[in-house]
Length: 323
Length: 305
Image (cartoon, chains in turn purple, green):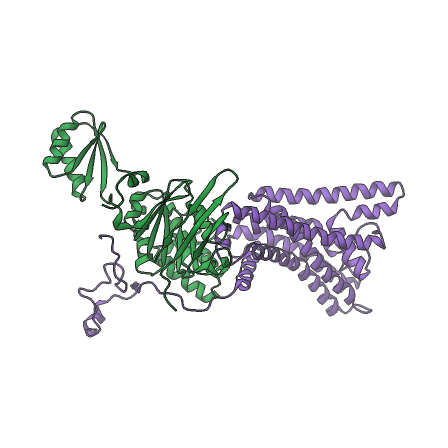
């Protein structure tokens, strides 16, 4: 056979190879002749170290995706949108702190922060959630994941966790900065600790719901542009329908129906379910939400939408995997 | 632990899709070393690999990989095997290093081990400085190397290589084949490599399995294949007989095949002989083509010669 491979432990490349095999007994003349900085092919080495389980692989995937969502480890251009949107999310907090410091008045309310900044969050969701899932479908990286111990559930879970963590960061950082600012400035009266905690719980609700919706929609197409457009279109549709319906109902003095109409917007839905429903804060929507059964309905709707999105994702990836 | 002498085994393995039967009661056994899986496009090679990875349930029959059942122990199998798909699978905005490290971590390697293994494996497949550049700018040959690296990065006991020479130029093809041979012989990793070209697998495999239409045509050690010698098809405008006579005179083996001649390649010098003969006789050469052995041809031959 002419195809026999060379033996292991032979030096790679011509220049490093001495005239005769380097016997252990004759090192003296090798010293000056072997050039510095030559890579020796020491042959293939097997890996004898530890192998971690599925959970740490899933965690590594989530961290990798989270970094990717913020453009870390990608090109400089990929960092512009997420960091610019993150900076815009900080603006109300910074302005509110300035108002507190200079005018001794409160600026932005904690629970209203996310709803007030909803276009920014929607743009972030639309621009970044396709990045989390679309390239793996488009460039067919998915089979490489599935040929490893990671399962479809792990994969979907990691992607959802990464997107939810990204949105949580986008909300929790300005809220916490605002709260720390309030504590440092020490306004007259007690600090609004309960409002801050309610808004943080709401941020978790926003993060999970928005990430589920965004990633589920984005996973339906391998094309990022289409994913971006679909998510932004869905947001515009929901908020538009919600506003028009509510305004129409208010114009005929049907305020109960107007309250329901606000819930069509997912941002007000979370506000109604978590902030108003569970923590009893003031609504962020221009009108009041339906009380009583409305709170239960909002909570059920949030959980239902999350479950639906996860189910869509699992089904989508089952299908993608069997291709 | 007793060394596993059977790397994989299937028993009456079948898989039907709504319109086609991809695998039809396939029973094969594969030992250590490099095994070639040959078949035309659509013969069921990729389906077999997917079943062996535990990604696709078989319609009937059983399969075992490294002594583990594919239906019950898919996750354990995927931990110790590597897979290089036929299709492109590289995100263009990552570098080969980042990608390979990531894939190592997906196989459960800790962070530092993943980095070391990725660097090692990329060097073994022959990627050097370019491994820090985004993969979008890679040539097909470099992409195939990264695809191979990610299949090896977690030091599997067995790798499935699906059409690894696809799209490569002749030189890249040779390099890839030599690399696969090294993986089997020197790295000590068993290899199941698919191709639709028997001729190319003959050069590197210890054992070849030929399937067609999901059925086993033949499974045997490479020495048992009789047609290991290569042939070239030669066509000239006029003077076939002259050329044939001249080549036989020069000690070559020639057979007539319709309007063309089949010349057996004994050594690279045969090509020189052919060239000189054509020049000397002043013939118009129309075609010189590497004899593409049709898989069916092998089975028309008597099985044990």
